[in-house]
Image (cartoon, rainbow, N blue to C red; front, side, top):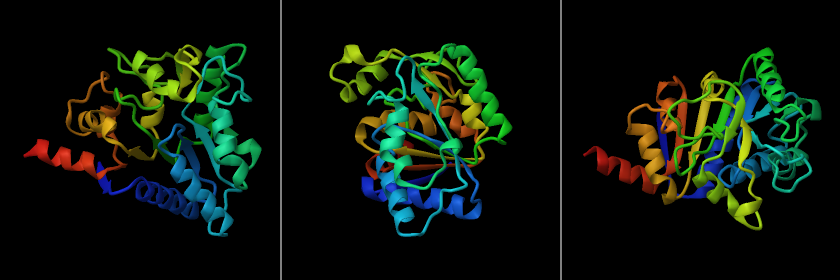
Length: 246
């Protein structure tokens, strides 16, 4: 793992965007694995700025999102499809047919998982996967468990995740309790991974992911087994990590 501590959220966002931009310039038809939530918003803003300044072209880029709430249509303001279009896709020249997001209201969610996994495989896998990390160590919606499913699957969300995501809804009762997510096996097959973590509330999860035992109880710890992972993390977390290693 390469660890890059940053002093501010803006610095994290700029650094992540630079890595994504470099990938697109090296491979114009790159396959990007995209994340949602508050953490990557700054990165998307930086990428939009690069596009508007004529520094980046998304016309050949293909994307696959990590996850989607089960039961929410794409038009729902809290669906990840809506998030991606509002915060990124509609601001750049990415083609509609190159955007892939699991359907949260698919008639047969199990078949939707199989189809999504097949699409990723047929396109040759993900070149660069963006990840955030939950306070309980989850990535995507792969929650801590005795076992983890390797491929795209339906997941019951942990109470901590529902509580954390309730800030985006009117109340906690509105938060979906299930989702479709890429599995850890799918994520680990990505050729390159960036994990973003900002805020001291992520401290314990990040430290366990980096230095703890590799365990399905901390899904992010599996990233220790990947050959090309860059962690862009809050410098305060990094300082705590150094203290713990003394």
